[in-house]
Length: 387
Image (cartoon, rainbow, N blue to C red; front, side):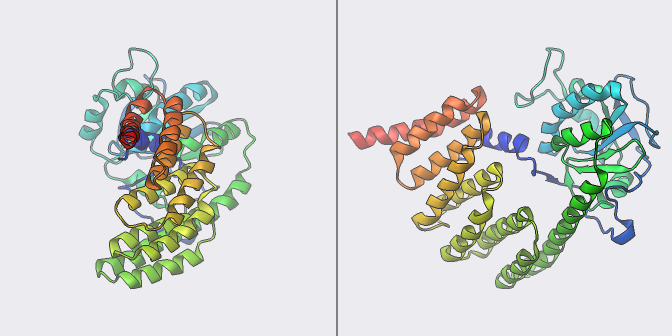
């Protein structure tokens, strides 16, 4: 069973996690592409819902020597919501240093207003008893909505970004300094504020990222067209072409995991699935959270009878075990839970129980509650085997 603890942890810690955005897929090319060093487009936001308690004015053009964070979000986007406390903390930290955060949705005003009245769930960490709703939480920064989508077109589409949350740091000369997940912006924002940011260096790195994102979009269109026609062998062959073209390990890994999903749709045999997992294991270890996700996918597919043989299960277990050695706290607990499940799949119930107990010792209160069920299952099976 995939626990609530696992779902929440992945949203907050796996920084590569995005929601597919309603802002649309970019068709910008060449000189039209918004990138690092580009002039930041003027803002034309329709509804300014929160303004830092009156501390901030509406922004159209960007003022010289001030720094802005233009972030795109939505009420339906789990990672966006989980990022809100971090955005609050960031705005408070830099409020006196000329930094203004503007978060933009493209939903109707009524949808945003209704969302703000919702009570905060236990998974959202807050300080102070007065913070009870999303309106209370977000009052320190500019939270807005732009239903005509013009802001999304000027930023998200122009920069070929189709996943949210997504933040754009606008520097003191009104040019784009950085683009990425808001949970990853601490270091670049601090360096931009303190005039230490190397824009040219990051521009070269980001250009490669955009090229790879364009490759992913091309793959989605090409493979998606074949899938709609139920041409599964052709779709798998086409996807292999894109995997060969992928340069970075992250992009190659994303495409390989897409291939795993395609195998399931195509009802490929276990040998083909296992062969793809072998390719995945070679590069998944670079990111502990991604390694855990890959290993958990193996567990889920083994439960469905779509992974055969001990070799794949052992490789996934070892992958997760190595990933756990680089982690602490809840994240380590989550990964050890994966290791425990894989040991169980291999028939090692006693070892699975030992590892699950270690995971329990590292988890917070909510994590313990969600890990408890599998722990009790393991104990019951061991007790039964002794009788």
